[in-house]
Amino acid sequence: MVRRSVPRTFRFSSWVSLTLIIAYAVYFLRFLRLASWQDDSLGLDDWDQHTFYLEAVVRSLRGLEIPFWNPYYKGGMPIFENPQIRIFTPTVWLGVLFGSLQGLKLSIPLYYLAGCLGSWYLFDRTLQAHPLVTAFCSVTFVFSGFMAQHMFAGHANYMSVQLFPAIYACFHRFKTAGRAGFALAFSIFFAWVLWDGFVYGFLFLIFLYSVLGVLHFIQSPDLITLRKLSLLAILTLGFSAIRLIPAASFYVEQGAYFMPSGEILGPWQILQTFLSHSQHPVLARNFSPQAHNWWEYGNYVGFAPIVGLLLLLPFARRKDIPIAAATFLCLLLMAGEFHPFAPASLLAQIPGFGGMRCHARWGIVVLFCGVVLLASLVERARESIQWSARLALLFNGLLLVVFVYVAYDLRINRKPLNSVFETGVHARNLVFRKEKGIETVKTLPGYGAASSQYQAMLNHLSMREGYEMLSWPTRVSSIGEPGYRGEFYLMQMGRPVVPVSWSMNRLAFEVELDAPDILVVNQNFYRGWKASGDFTAESVDGLLGVRLKSGKNLLVLSYSSPFAVAGIAVTLVTLFGAIFLLWIRPRDPQFKSSQ
Image (cartoon, rainbow, N blue to C red; front, top):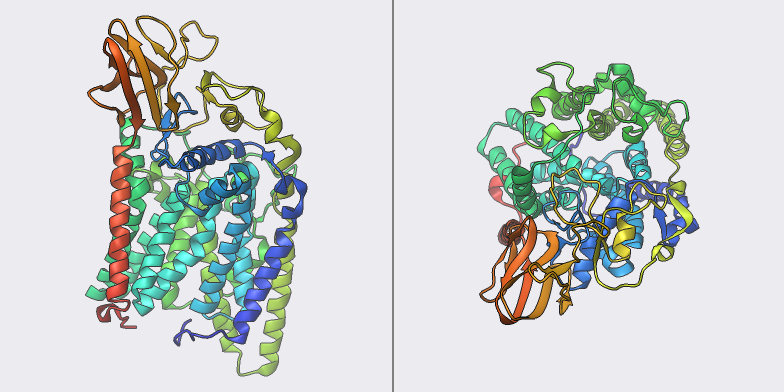
């Protein structure tokens, strides 16, 4: 579809398409003015989990510590090793500035804006589509049911799906122009999805760009193409190392619990995930034998994009083969493991992909590839009738009608996000104990959400139980149990100890003894715990302990993840290397496209 270089200045049509997209975003996000989105009302279901995850990172950063350890969760648990937790993304910094609850809420319009700008840049500036085509495809992807329905269910880590258009735009621009800046942007946005805890999205992107890369190499089997693809892979892995290295090491050692994904969806059921109204009381039911409510994982777009894509298939060309093949493969992945040699069955043999809980989630990749293909087909259809001014005018009018219809349809047929947060349930009303010292409880009664982890953390309580897919055995005792002896105690003497200072990663003690004893901290022991001086941190029946000597003992227990440190180092080296590459040769002559 692209036949000329993209101009460096805005065209009038660029302003038209951008205005249409932003105007619709304002219309779609009107619910953000509601009191429940502006006060400290808490969200239902998984909102508690992700607010709690964010609070652990925010509390560490506010204490000027790297967020290595979370003492409030399942007896203490490493942070970098949990792939669902955000690390150093805009949502985290919003949480630092405004608090975790408000930061999470503010990140919703931020990601919608990122999706709008990324889609506009892809369709208008990169593919140079007509402004109505740009607006139509952008709105269809950004405001589809996927993000709305996951936000309703509390899957706040899914928001970075809005980076998909920007990632593809950078891939396309680097493929054609060879600028190192596009390679850098591609790899950062790609890794950002993993930094933001969207593990499924990261796996989606790995599959998608593996397919696109292989097909691109088949079409252009030369050294230049190989160098381009290799650079993208190296940079992406390097920027992802900050999460990949600690998460992979933890997964290999500890394992994880995955609910088996046994659903097999037929063509009509797959179609329903794009057509059925998400909030419909009758349609919000399980597919049989699908284990999860489809409406939670659906992706409503309505009939118009699907019908338009099918009608315009005659305008497909050879250059559309990579994106069309990716669309078809992801449709097969949505169907599930219907055969031993089905794509989902084969992909499940690869570490990471085997834990896909719901194959219907591949629908967002199908939609993204579909709108990219649709933009090319519509543009070619427009070009084929430019010889007739009347036909061109009629076609543009039809595009406008379809855009208005789709925009309205997406607004009314989605989960009612305005009811995600319940006004009247406030975080400040949940504090029922004064801050003394950290204490471990087994669980807390629910306050309207599916769990109470955030509530516990607000009250300086460590919850032994938690909703977590990672395998993490814990031997801590909670208040009220026979074995509970406090959070810090001497094993032989049985008396409690009060730390001189306490933080998320660091404990300082001053203990004077008449005889040697063992100081026990009611938290899980894990490698990475260190003791100062000649003291040694060790496991005492699974708990963190250190042997003390007679006399005065001054010691500091601190935790740092060696694998997280290694990941941070690799990512920093990649960043400096990429900056050097960008500075030395922003456009490598050997990367110039032969197309």
